[in-house]
Image 1: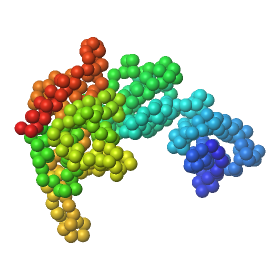
Image 2: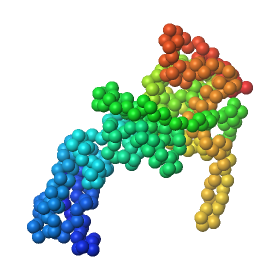
Image 3: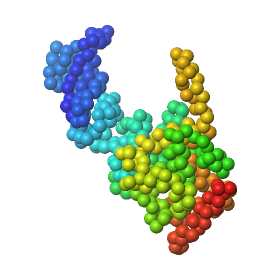
Amino acid sequence: MRIHLLVDKQVVHEDGTHDLYFNITADDGRRFRVKTDIRCEQKPVGLLFPRTERNSVAKSARLRELYDQIEEFGLQNPRMRSDRMKDAVLMIVRGAGAKVARHGKVFADYILEFAETKDNRSTRILYELTHKKVVEFDAMATFSTIDEQWLEDFERHFKNQGMSVNGIAQQLRNIRAVFNYCRKKRYTQDYPFLTYMIKEERVAPNALTVEQLRTLRDYPCEAWQEIYRDLFMLSFYLGGVNAGDLLLCRGLKNGRFVEKRQKTGELIDVPVCAEALQIIEKYKGKNYLLCVMDNYKDYHDFTSRWDKALKKIGTTEIVPDRVGRRRKVVYHPLYPNITTYTARYTFASIAANDCEIPTETIGKCLAHAWSKNTVTARYISDDRRKVDQAFALVMDKVRG
């Protein structure tokens, strides 16, 4: 970090003084300015104001205090991103960051540290979003300042911004996970979640009925939409397997789809029905089970296209564009809210509501960790026969 002083001569206050800024170059090469609470007529020489400056001794002392705190914070956080560094400097100048400047890391830094422990990119992105929210709400929050009142204020702040109850709950669960990680690492013994309850709302699953699924399966969609429709059906046939787990699979094992879930590390081990095999053969890959990842470096890019394409399966209409020419295509989708994850909800819902399969068995079909982490489950060997029977029932129901 490099710190320079800048006097803004373009803004003149009533008493003839100007604002003094810290012009900072972070270690990543990016620059930013932070206005201090010091106003002056003359630029300081080094960190000292000329004697002719009004209140020169007091101003010099204040400038030295701020400079030392910022410099120490920069030395203790050499790899901090410039946007985080700017937040920290702002808090130091406002007086709330002195304690943090002396002790180094703030809570937001531990969120990024925890995010780096995650192999799954999607999970890292979720925690990076939580980092952004915490910085927005309280950039200088520490273990000791985050208490039950802080959590309630955090919840209220983002509720007032229009964030959903479940969206806020996700951020609070992430904060709780970071606290658990830091307690295990012995960074802190503070834990505000002993008495604080995270509020959530039950939302109806975004699932298709059996009839809707059959309609999608048999719909005469456009040629470019076929791969997206087919892979949605393949995901369903494999128990609603997540996009990443499906696209990164290297191949079947003994005729079964066997993979570890990226999200939890739990084992997916499900049968492959005839319909699924037909789709796999149609889109067979060279280095992967499917051809998608032979052409994409990052499965997230394809998944984004996949979600958008599913929402365009349906009828179309040609309407006039802005200049009046009839060339704009308007889509009237079969299912406007469909996503790749709908396949997972659909499998679970059909299994439960149409086939009356027990919840615990459905959990095993979906490779949910809770399905085998109960006390009773620890005494039972893992037998896939019930899973295979459940898949057979669901497939027969969809076939009609």
